[in-house]
Length: 281
Ligand code: SAM
Image (cartoon, rainbow, N blue to C red; front, side, top):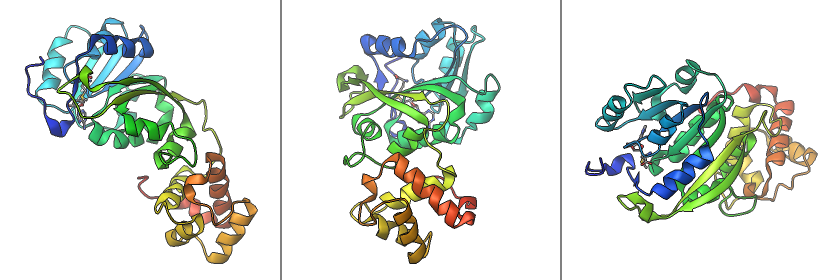
């Protein structure tokens, strides 16, 4: 199948290195009874091994040439289903709950141009998943595994940490793909926590607070939160003082616990804040 022309817009860099494929499969450890979601199966480099394990596999592929080919290849295996769709438009809760409403593993060599959006989508329904094994551009992977104050630490780092333990597994070099990308990749494992790591009071508001705090990285937390218009100056001062957070700090220095405390304090001070409903990202 490698003779098929790759579509750049779909982030098509197909895995052609059997050692890397074997290492990813070792990590995912598919087994009979498992439910595995594969995003972007492409030419089936991972799908074949996942299918051979006896696990149920739901694969979502946007390429109109590849999805039917894979469907045909696995037509005799009732545990494999290929959906031709844009993963960002699929109702994951509805699709996955047809088989199981929890415990899904995800295996995905993601198109780099949509990897953050896909991750945000997974974070909207964290209880569906037990483990995500994602191949990401190395820079994106570094961000997700970064500690506070590190320049890579960001909004998505905090959102992920609320629901998952994130570990960096191994680097994949450009030569393992066809066509060869310009950048290194990394495999990350996201192990779902049994419940959110901290009580944030209201997750939608938590996300708004974090996003506001990072909106202008060079500005102080005070300026960022003031600009976001959540609260009057007086209330903002009181809340930061109660949370023992120096208003002169920058958002990127706050830990997950501090953001959680800040969100809970905003809700306590202005209960209607928790009812604000907005797109998450
Ligand atoms: N898993 C294969 C592999 O490792 O060789 C292919 C990985 S390739 C980096 C990304 C795959 O995602 C491509 O097959 C591409 O067509 C597919 N894709 C791109 N955008 C997508 C989307 N929005 N929804 C579902 N699949 C998508």
